[in-house]
Each structure stands twice: as C-alpha cells, then as structure tokens.
Length: 115
Length: 113
Image (tube, rainbow over the protein chains, first blue to last red):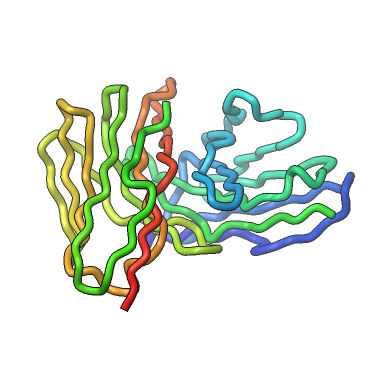
C-alpha cells in the first residue's frame, strides 16, 4: 500500500517551454500533497504544499506564477513549470499524506533537464 | 528551520554499526527517517511520534528524545544494501491543520565489503 507515482520519470525540454509533471496516489486518498526540488548532492527543499480543492501554499522564494500547482482531486496533483530555464533543471519529487496520517510517501521523482 | 544531521558522511565495512543523529532547535512533533539511493526518491523508513519512543525494523532502529529535540538512527550489522543517503525530517505545524516536513542535509552512508 501507500504507492505514489509520478509521470514522466524524466523530461528534456527547450528553454522557454512549459512542462507538466503529474503526481498520483494509487491506493489511498491524498488530502495533502507536497512538491520538493532536489539539486545534486543536496537535501530535499519543499516548494509548496497543496490540499485538495485549495490553492497551494508556496514556500518563501518559490515563484507561484512559475511553478503552477493544481490539486484537482484526492489522487492527483500536477506541477507545471512555466517558461522553463536551464536553472530549473532539477529532480522534482512529490509526496502525499492521507488524512490525519503522519506518514508521508514519496513518488519516484521526475528529472527535468532544460536545454 | 532545517534540522542538523551528523555525521555528514560515514564509511562502514559490512557488519559494522553506525549511528546517525538529527537535532532541531525547534520543538518537534515527530521525526521521520528516509533513505535515498542515488537517482531515486526517498524511501520511508520509520516515524517516531512520541518522546521516548523507539522503533525498529530488522537491524535499523531509531529513538526520539523529545526533551532534547533529538533523534538517532541506529544501523546494526550493516549490509551493502544500507548504502545511501539518510535524511531525517522534522514536522512543524504550517497552519490550517497542516504539518510539513523539513529535511536535514542528509548523511551519506557507504557500506563496503
């Protein structure tokens, strides 16, 4: 149980284009989903928290107009990187929590490379 | 605020033991431990919810000292498969009934034959 999937696993795009990453909880309802970014050899940095049906809460320094998050249902959240630039290249990982559960499960991550 | 992990890196021979520490300057509601292998997402190991709680699975266990705002992860008789980067995550209340995890910088563990 507690499986979170992400799609795509990796994506290469040109500078200036937009990329959408999907995060799905496969066997539970995720009331809260989190999006993290991880640069090589660094820790996971929380970008935003989203609750189903509500606007996402962004961490300080994360541009909400650049990283659009939609948590449309209890099993799906999407992160859209708009007008991507090479410095946006990173490993993006989503995680999900069910209801009042303390446990947080991570998706397999999406490696974004912007050329 | 990011919890502090120590050591930053450790190299073990198979069968040796290791301890990874995690401390916070803020009151902790819970401590989560994850292991991440290169190029993969973090894998949940365990969560400790109460001060004084200890948990374990096979040869990996952890303790949580709520008063000292610290947690330790114990790896006993290490195996090659234990290699990876270990992160502790501490919960903090972010409002409206939500909690969010803040991760330490990680401890890179390498187990060699």
